[in-house]
Length: 171
Image (tube, rainbow, N blue to C red):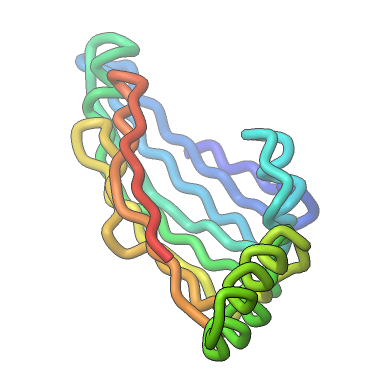
């Protein structure tokens, strides 16, 4: 296996790839990213600038197939991630939660909506998730974030062969 070590957005990363072209081509791929910059990663990869923090991502995948499509369609494996020192930028959920507990009259509701638009930030106490890959489709039912005054979950799938994402979040 070819093993490379380096940096991934400020954190140490190890990537291993073993590709065998004898007979039907097969590959094994492993990644272990630690303490990387979440904000820089998301800004670069998907132009998202509302999350900051550090993250880790270990994962192992394997596939076998006679073509590039077959290799993608045959992907199997598992990846996990965990966020540390996370911050959601643009909304202060703790302030909103505290104000929501004191809604007594119409003006209170207007103040609640107004404060939601003021911005702020929410500390992410903990966020982690497991993604299982089968037949080129990555699925999660276990991605969650503890935002101190509430929880957020993400469920769904990313279908690599079809280039389709079906993800739903709930807070």
